[in-house]
Length: 130
Image (cartoon, rainbow, N blue to C red; front, side, top):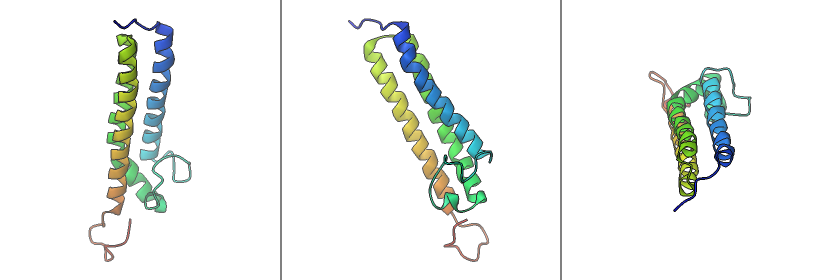
C-alpha cells in the first residue's frame, strides 16, 4: 500500500506545475491580444507566423483555445496531485498533466500555423501567405 507523501513534498511538485500552466496561459493571452509582439521572444516561432503582425495575431488567436485547455488540464492535475497524496498517483498526475499540456499546446500551434497558411478569400495569389 502506498504511503501518502507529506504535504510539503506534494506542494513542491504541484506549485511549479501550476506556475508553468499559469505562465503559458498568460503568454498565450498576451500574444493573442497583441500585447506581446513578434519580437518578444515568446509565442509561435514559425516563419509564416512572424511574417507580419496580422499573421502573428491570427495564429495566436486560433491557437489560444487549445492552449487554454492544455493549461487548464495541467492546473487540474496539480490540484488533484495535492488532493490524492499517494506516491503512485504523483507520477501519473505529473506525467499526465505535462503530456496533456504539451499535446494541446502543439495542437494549438498547428492550428495557428494552418490558419496563417490558408489563402485569403479574393487573393489574386493563392500561394502567397498572409
